Length: 371
Image 1 (cartoon, rainbow, N blue to C red):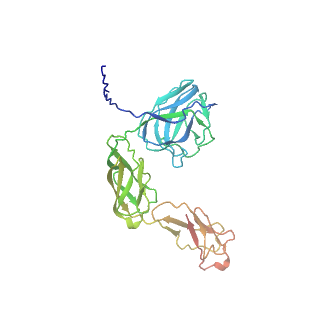
Image 2: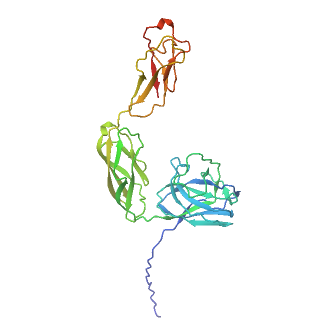
Image 3: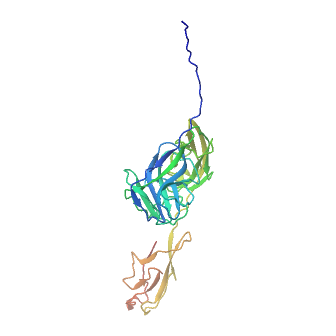
């Protein structure tokens, strides 16, 4: 009997695995028909982005084509309701096709950090017919907006919605490489000057993070590590976009200060320094009141309505006086013997005239200027 020895031959195959694109939004053709939305900037969301990505394209289902269409992506805004969101990317205006997903590339492809986003569309013709439906957790918003490139921020005023519906609209995104590392933290402007009277939230500079792949920084590790005056500034966000802003500032902070911001991604951290010059705020302007003439001398038989003097209020910083004039304590209008124009400051004899008992006497009145 011949013995047969079987040997397994090893075969090694190496290959690169490319991360797959993914979508956010509504990829289903929804059940209700919708139209009549020309010159409205409409948005839906918010949709959660759980990993950093770059926008590739945006798609909108059209049942009956008409006019032109623009699609866009916004951040969800400070209250996660699209209002006040920043424009991330948009398509060029295009002529849609009927009974089809209209997929268009976006004109820019900035990196989108983890967060929440709204998808928007802007039609030019009421005849455009598309699909809408109801899904829990997603809403729509709309505002009149003449057909043109989308604004840099989704409006916060004159916005309607939500009404519970959303549309067949989604975005396709590509994952961002996990090898990105920060190489520098910079600021725009590179230095800042601020008054010690500045209110909390006053912007000093935008934080900019240069990365190894030249793309927008995707890390969540943006922090203020040191500042010469503790608590003077804060960041608007721990990720880009972020601004260095005033947190609490006072006259004790006058002079040259600095703020150090650190950015971390993939266990690599870099820092940058923002010089901040804090200047003393000028004293508040003061209001003074004078009379022309300063001590008028008038006849006792001067008729009612006759001009006695003009009250003149002036601000120490030269600003125009736009307030009002009135009689006040302690002397008021000498028992009703004088009148004043509240806007011009003209002081006149009262409607009853001057009594004969006032002849060859000094009378006192008190005028108050208010602004």
